[in-house]
Amino acid sequence: MRNRIPLLIATVLAALIATIGCAGGVPAAPARAASTLPEAQVLTLDGAPTDLAAAIRGRAALVNLWATWCDTCVGEIDALKRLASQTSGRSDALVVGVAVGETPAVVSAFARDREMRYLQLVDEDFRLTDALGQRHVPATLVIDRAGRIVYRGDALDAAGLAAFRGAMSASTQ
Image (cartoon, rainbow, N blue to C red; front, side, top):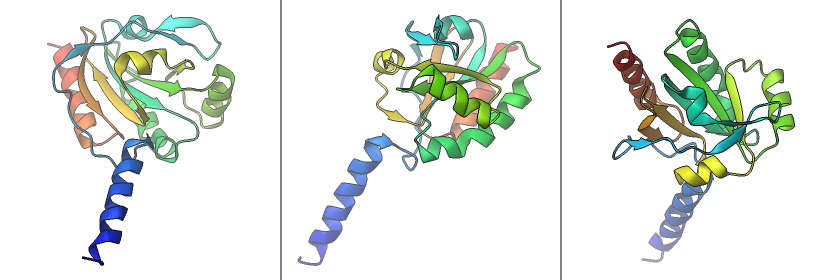
């Protein structure tokens, strides 16, 4: 019994750490039911207010919620850049990064330094993440052409990519 207590404490601590903050090791799960993307004001890199739902309207989108301080988020950048490059010629699909809890100036400099040329928005005041009930980064959302969230996951993975491919193929039918 004495040997099991430290293991139990370590297991509980690992579970708590995985659910708070940067959640890189938490497995992704599909959305339980499609829900509509909320209309919540975010900012462009120039600081102008905009709405994510309006920016996406009519297109399939992979939305990556991230932060500059999150190592797992930074680790996803190259994959997101490749995915954005693959969809850049399509008018019916896009990749969007939404930096959470940071200023447009910080995100703009970070995105410029890392050549993140896909659409970047900023949820400085947590309006979007609060409306989504999203409490950690990274997070992956797949939005269909009707603005419904058809997938919710943590770090970008095969399930998120498959959901995005499905949303893109459904957008051409």
